[in-house]
Image 1 (spheres, rainbow, N blue to C red):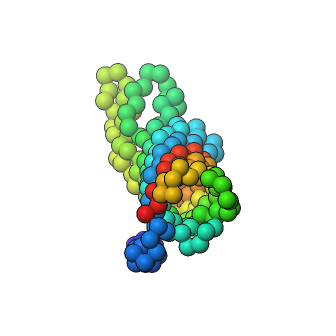
Image 2 (tube, rainbow, N blue to C red):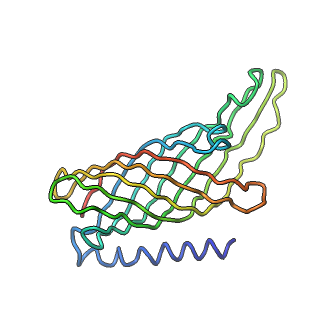
Image 3 (tube, rainbow, N blue to C red):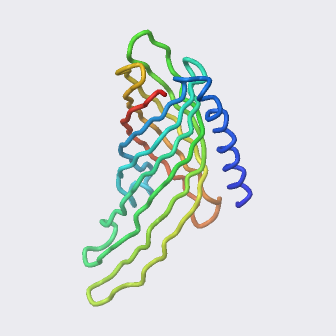
Length: 207
């Protein structure tokens, strides 16, 4: 697993070098986008256990051509544990799910002469995640905390949206994404896919 993590890190690092190296000679084609939104768990196991949560992130982009943008995308989303799973007499603290995503991919634009452009997004990467310490207690009994757990999954995202140009250097965007995080290990303790939809709004600054 360490070898896989090392390979992924190298691919992400090497893939970003052309972007950083060409920003000076390709002025105006390098961009930085910031966004926020909500992430909705999909699938019975995920959606029954965790709530829709807030998230946000940053995207480094390089306009390879008018219709293709290479992206390096980072985001974080937070899902609170659904306490309705427990009987009313229990007191529940912790157990929330935090997911970080690090994705390499592309945005594919439909060229337009107007200010509004439509695009599709496709990418893949690694999704480190953490479930916080969980304590379930009854009156008069403090309960035994379950330790924080971490894991790293691989997965992909696919989506689409639109951008509106406010000025040559500033665009606002809206996007709908689907993400599929593969099981950490088939047949292991956690052998289910984690899937979600994200609704994102943000702005992109072209440098």
